[in-house]
Length: 368
Image (cartoon, rainbow, N blue to C red; front, side, top):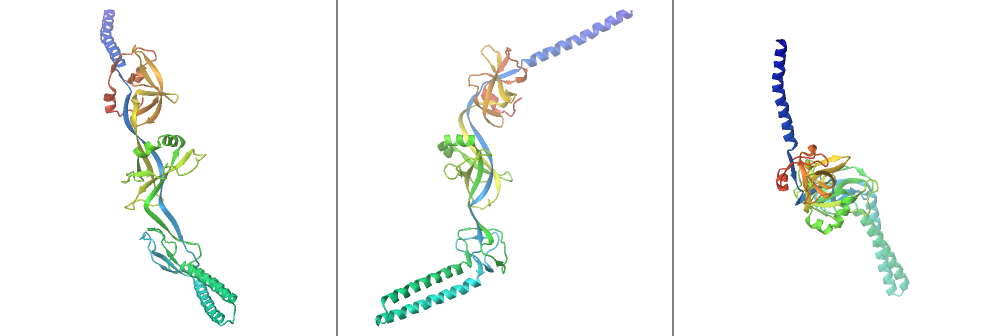
């Protein structure tokens, strides 16, 4: 009786377990064959190259005292916009004031001596050589007076161009030495933005320089991640502003120019240069269709007999969800898009083909 009950229990368990196992195998079998295949697509894509940059005024100078003396007057305030020719500082150079007065007096004396000598020459008291000597003495005295006047004029420091006054280093009444910094003056109407470009990118740019100059769009992203509203252009024609590469970094300095009508940009700021470039008829595939082995990128290619083979590819550019292919694929190839991990080398696969336009339409997945 007990044996019969045990046998009945075994039969009951078998009737439950076996269908469940078969169902699991069937589901696994179906999942193993849910493979989607697509093809590479040629399309125009926009790539963005990013470079950390430093922002400089097109003209930024140190305003220094030209002579020693007391700072008599400060005619500007920090952050003030000034025009070319505006007086910024006035210095009292006591020594040069007295020298100017002395040299001016010497010039007047030489003029009187010349006039007196000419009178004597007309009366035939002195020779023409005496007149020539006095004329030379007068020219020398005038030159010294002009030099003293120029040195005295150094007491008034004027703006050489339109710009913004930076921090003042001294207060009124301070004794300043010759060459001492009083402030700095920045012309921010046009900003020069410097960034370093690797040698490979430099060579690619120079190979298609005219095309890049006409088509590239250059933007500046500020430290708060906002985009500066005015576009930039590469300065100095070729963009590069140095004659040689940095041997330590392998980079060469480029410069982009940005108009600054609202004076938002200031000397010394940092940001990121964005160079947007359109690639015509680029060959692209979804990142999800690739896999990586030993730092190399591969895809599964399905041949005419529906047999899968892994194929090495090289990536030219990486975008958000697609790769721009440099070599290894053609538009006629069929590549596994979904189910990459389920495919084996030389294995025949059953798949569903979908057009690349449909696959790339809402691609937001990366490689497996």
